[in-house]
Image: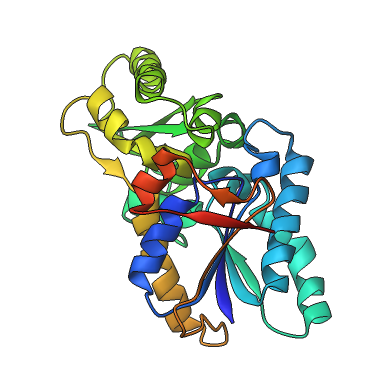
Length: 283
């Protein structure tokens, strides 16, 4: 058995890298749906359909668990799949399988509170607001998942989401550093203007953006903390596996990289982030 990691493209490798570091003996299958990437600009039903197809491919490859290393898929498709598709699919497969996302652990990291916690609504005036900027795809922004779920838990945190329509596509295509940095700077400036001051913290709410985290640090006010989704996801998966021994992660250290797009070597931005050459097989 193995752990599957799904993303519309190479952005999920940022999560995958941290999972591999955390579970070096586990078997992993990574699936990049590059033929449909990026999915952040698609409508909800298309996102659900593409995410389900990716999960089916990973379950067919022997995965017990699939981690959606994609904010858009986690925000739009995860709950639908868990509630309406997985129960019947488990019966068809005849074994326990599950799909997990990255937004829950990210919100836990951003609030410092467990997902189950909901703040008691009080009329007390909040003396000081913690301003949190979230950079995301348009679909994640439309879902308002970060505003809604953080507000349930922390009334002293104000969330401002900045949709970045082209950034994931540019990273996927291996755009140059100057072009990427210019785009990042424009989005940081836009959200700062909207807030009226620099944010106190920021979430890179698309896993592609971790590959240009240094550009976000340079564009944000010096010292602005970034909430890193890969680390939060690795911590959450470790806790989940400890509670659910029925899901087997494998123990041979296998690494398989699949793509629905063009197989072969990835561009230099991906290889630099990964730390070495990386080649994908046809899914």
